[in-house]
Image (cartoon, rainbow, N blue to C red; front, top):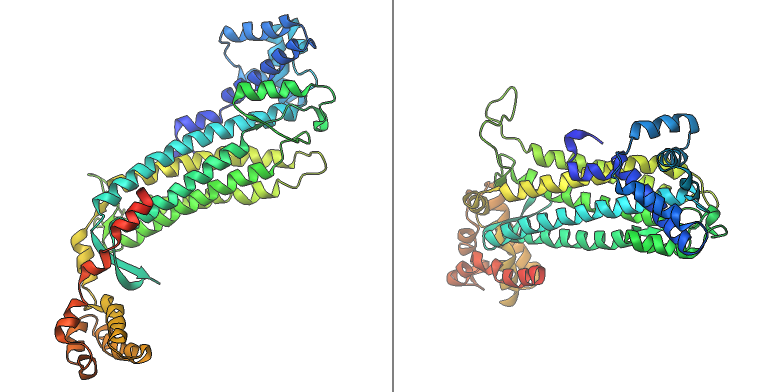
Length: 436
């Protein structure tokens, strides 16, 4: 985790203090259930909660010092708790294995992280929706292969982004549900030394579902899907970031990141206003996606378990969620403050002498009786003249001067085909599909 790209709320989820609090709750709830089943004394469970009610400071350094000797993190934690609780602590962890604690804790942490990410997505969706309606009918050029194609609106660009991130949210909701499972099943997952009712009790207390079959560990296909989902969200972030970066190029300059008073773009060139935030988002997206492959490789563990997944998850759990949280917040700020230049959009629309209307002329000629092949030739031969003139010639005027074209379409009919509003007639329909 790099502090530069981290926010406190998400970082706190992965702090040692939070992890040890979750471990304690797992152990204490399990001890409660064991007491109700008569496996351990009820006083033992009460002793744990009585000590916890004093709001003890979790001494991470002390636990780490014990682990330096035991070489086992869960045993180190249980030893520290026993030192503080006393003799009744011996009834903790009855019939449990370390993975019961570690995997259930990771499920809690990932659901906590997912809840923050879902809130981040809600904020981003709200910002995108606002800009979409603001520029619903702001005409701009649509590009394919980076080349002028036909008119769209800037609002449609935002609506497309909204629909994409709405899908991201739905995927994350599903991934959260998939990862939120509890396993308290003991060695190799057979419940030989612990009653399945203990697992059900702990799961209910922690807001998790019971893992149907745990082989001492929760199956890692769940984690693979979770991190793959984070990777898809990161890719959607990058897609919108790249769009902004292209729109900010000097030759385009239809939109740009907000440039604050006193901000500097270059140490050498005082005129520079660089898209540094969206470039940063492209980089952060790469880092989030980098967690997906290791998570998928974690699925294939040996037999009922090994710990080859453990070191991986200690990296990707914090890094991917913290980075994505930061990236979503940064993108929300970019969208909210994005500078949009409608006049420049119109200038770029007009840049190529009306070429953006070529398809309408093509279709009109076919409707007037020309074959599609003939129509294409008639339009293209005039369009290429405009292209090669760098837009100084007018497609409309060239068509009006082409006898083979005017034999089928009058000057008035040709002029009507160059109406910009024609391309925007279904914007309301698209918005209704996206926003309801």
